[in-house]
Length: 156
Length: 262
Ligand SMILES: Cc1cc2nc3c(=O)[nH]c(=O)nc-3n(C[C@H](O)[C@H](O)[C@H](O)COP(=O)(O)OP(=O)(O)OC[C@H]3O[C@@H](n4cnc5c(N)ncnc54)[C@H](O)[C@@H]3O)c2cc1C
Ligand code: FES
Ligand code: FES
Image (cartoon, rainbow over all chains, first blue to last red; front, side, top):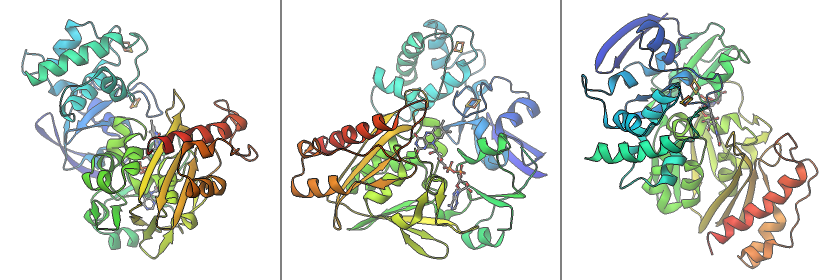
């Protein structure tokens, strides 16, 4: 077993884990934070995207032990009480989802994209930034629109 | 995944001391974790290199840029030192995989893995970079030995790579639209050791194109590449592209890289 201490959405969490435990399993099965999804086993779909010390990473391709001592933000950590994060609000406003399976990963990638980008995001920047997130429903148009609006909301 | 122990040493010395018959180093995990998940690989212990400060970081002198093995692709892509000295390398790192992969994957993991479609091998070979391991230094052309194969001995650790500063450099690749891995990628570097052209994605491993190097040394323009044909013999052929198509793409990508500099 491996001891891990990870700050998840601002709260310190410690656990004694089988070293094989993936970060996404720790979040979903140990902490019951089921907003982070698993959509593939090839590290390609991005449904599991979370922030590790502020960087967007795929939680299915990271051992929980690698996050020891670090800070993780999941989709559950974005809203402030009942007030949605500007990116979440923009996805709702612009209908950036259909079934919603890819949405937590899309939103987490979008927030990291905006935080890591100086100046306004072009449509091209957004589409390139979504390279690691797949959506099987929407055709991406409204996701791209939502992110452009969410980026403006985040800087407001 | 099969069961394994997890170790996180704090120095290269400690990491190497933990090496055993069935141990494996873990860098960014972007290749290793999927293979462990699929049980394509089994390890008695996973030695996580993530807490070793001496493996991380970028430093520059007047004639070279040194990049630690655990430096992530996103850090190389964003580095002002790399941009200033070797813009082609910054561009290469910024086009690897996707945002999340670049935030985790590392230089050392990429070259130790030596996937035929990986981008870094083209940069290392074209720039005539030198790989430093815990025991020796190797010119890149001796480091990459074949498909998924390198000169690394079992348990040998890549510590850093030293890239001599070229006069100019550029990289262009044609990506598979679904996987985004290169079908063919060409790195061109005008170096102190002459003109060097290195290709990834098209063959079983990185290779140079002497005919292009000679032509570009005489006249650095995309035009001179037009008459050079690449033999399709021995190039990769799969559901994504035939060998002949890959051979053609090498010429197109080389011209694109040169055109971006002229
Ligand atoms: C969806 C996806 C898309 C990708 N697209 C691209 C792409 O377009 N281009 C591209 O080049 N790559 C791509 N990659 C691969 C990515 O660049 C990985 O970073 C790389 O394959 C491995 O680096 P890593 O740090 O993750 O290493 P790991 O997966 O941790 O390790 C890989 C191997 O290297 C060994 N190793 C790691 N570090 C060292 C070291 N310092 N010394 C000795 N051995 C070591 C490990 O033991 C293991 O065998 C992609 C990956 C994914 C998941
Ligand atoms: S679950 Fe698909 S990338 Fe993580
Ligand atoms: S909304 Fe269904 S997968 Fe994206």
